[in-house]
Length: 264
Image 1 (cartoon, rainbow, N blue to C red):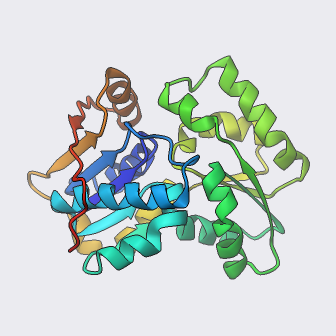
Image 2: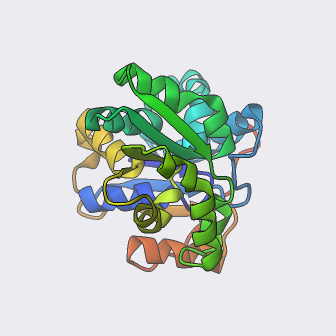
C-alpha cells in the first residue's frame, strides 16, 4: 500500500496524479486539516507533525510514504527517514527540481510557503542538477488558506496571484516550480498570469512518476483496491474540495493521530 500525507487538502493533487496513473492501486491519504498550514510553523513543529502523519499512514498499512507536502519535504524528510528506517520516503522537492533542470533555461522560479522558501532547499537542489541556473524564490503564504477555503476563482485570489508573481514575471523566469502541493489548484490562473512561455511545473505528477519507477510493484492494479482518504478535521468543505478535485464523491474519515509516533 502507498501512503501519502499533507498539511491539508493540497496533497490531493498528488492523489489525483496517482489515480490517473494507477487507478486500482492501494493507498491511504492523510490531510492534516486540523493543523494546516505548516508553512508558518517552526522546523521543530513541522518535524513533529510529519512524524505523527507518517505514523498514521504506516499504521494503516503503508509500505512506501510519499510526503505530499513541500514544507514537510523540505524540513522533515531526514527525520522521517531516521525515525522509520524500514519504510522508504519520497519527498516532492527533488523530482520537481530535476524536472526544472531538465527543461534548461537560466532562470528558475520557485513559489512556496515561507518555511519552504526560507529553508533554501529548492535553490540547493535545483543547482545540484543545473549548476548554472539562477533560482528566484517567492513566498506566497496566502495561497494555502485561499485553497483550503475553496476560493480558487475568487477575485481576491487573482489579486494575490498578481501581487506575488509580478516580480517573477518581470524577472523573465523560464520555468516556475509550484513548491507547494496546494498550488496546483491554482495552476490554470498562475499559468495565465505568467504567460505561455513559462513552463509551470506541478510536483504532483513528477513525484508519482518517480515513485512508480522505483517501486513499481506497489502500483499494480488490485481487484478490490483499498483507497482511504482521511482528515484530522473533517468538514463538508474538505469533502467538497476532494470530490471536485478527484472527480468522484469523497467522504473523508476522521483521523486519530497517536500522541507519540510508533517507530518501525
